[in-house]
Length: 135
Image (tube, rainbow, N blue to C red; front, side, top):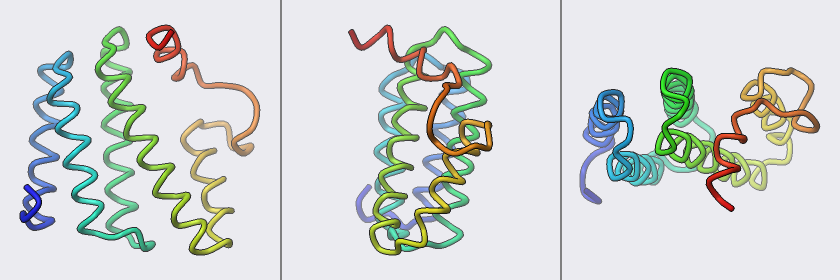
């Protein structure tokens, strides 16, 4: 997998997403998707570019769609949470490379929450799906 080109990794990520739509409790498929996402990010690099941004928009959208459609399935919540964490870590690396990128991070966080007022305060209920499973 480490030698596959980015185009093949994208195909693998799409295939895994399709698999999860039909087998939404398959944690191994979700884990595989997370590993492929990390490999693909390594290929694309952490520099700001449209490919990385589009990749995250797609993956975050897929995750949101799945947890909305199948809200009681823990695997999907964990997978979506992992994608969000990978996204935030990538954004933090970008922010340290460019302090002006921090404003964009706040806007992206607001868009994820859908509240438009920055990252502080309130909640979207999405975290509640993970909260009970961890403790």
